Amino acid sequence: MPKRVCLLLSLSGLLLLSGIPAQAQRQTYTSATDARFFFSHPKFKTALRKLSSVKTVSSKKVGFGGTPGEFYILSKECLAYGKETDFIALSDDDNPVMRAMGLVCLAQLDDERYRGLLNSHLDDREEAVLAVGCIIGRVTIGEIVKRLIENPNFLEQE
Image (tube, rainbow, N blue to C red):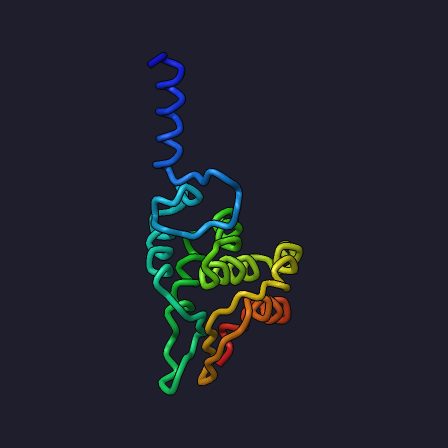
């Protein structure tokens, strides 16, 4: 086989193994080896690994006991160790809970600066479970964004 063909096949294999998508489209976070987060802080990657199994967007106080929800706890870790580029990448994730995390973090970083990006998700009809206090229900990502625009810290509410 000619050297050029071998080199091309080798490069194609490396791109495939690196997790770089063949086409530009919404991506699903799969692991800390996700190419979008290659340069991210290790503690941010750990938070993403945990977040990948979370099924509910939750606030500071959830349920009868008023304990912090897992999403809320991980949002603090993401904000502490993530960068705006990490949050922008998350805001376009295929998983609605991951997408919500990116949007929450961007709104809390600077809701005015990212208003355009937040507005672009107002029509997002994908649903997620939202738990704030004793109220738990299904809402769209667009509804979460509306709350973030009104109050970037709505998950802090008692």
